[in-house]
Length: 123
Image (tube, rainbow, N blue to C red; front, side, top):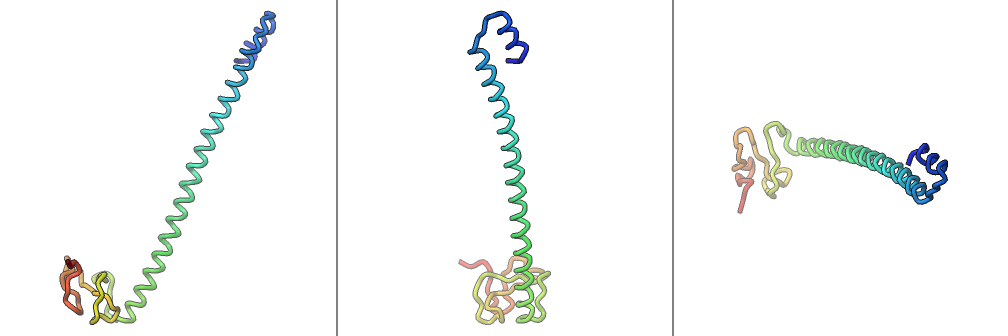
């Protein structure tokens, strides 16, 4: 209920407290809804910001780990080049790093480990 409506009700001598209280409650409710929408929007923005920050940190850590792994592999396999070599998941007793290594440029399906000649996909 707007101020003129409240004044009109009182001026006419028909003081209807219920209408005034309902009007005030509606105003408060409207303010609360607006505040809730702002809070939800801020929470979404903050959540998105936090999530983006976590993703960036994870990527940076992952890149750092990959660099370290590549340096270690390069020490064990001097001609290692991640542009054309893939490290598999299977143990390989003949490999200097203990895992199968594949030349994915010549062997796209990873059927021939450079050391044990076993495929990457096994049953």
